[in-house]
Image (cartoon, rainbow, N blue to C red; front, side, top):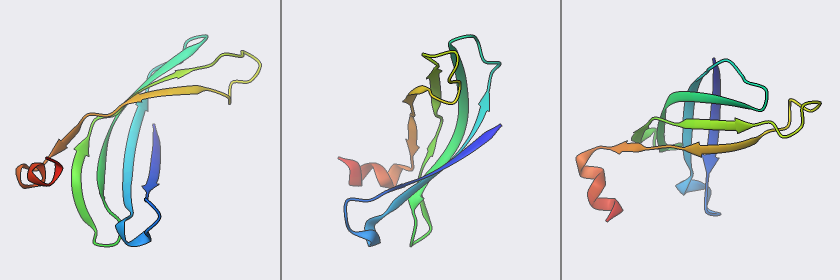
Length: 89
């Protein structure tokens, strides 16, 4: 089990968004590992949630001697509230 916290901003701190994600990692193989999780995306300063997320990560370990070095490929579907969909379009 692992967790991540991310902050996204376009230069103006008031518009900063954050993500909190919790992951479950399946048993690592020799060159890769798969993690699945759940998360929440929202505005940091107004404490409003924007979307529920279901991230899936593929970690690729290119060097066996450096297990702490990995390439991460992530797909994160987001589920928005119906009133938030009007702001996206």
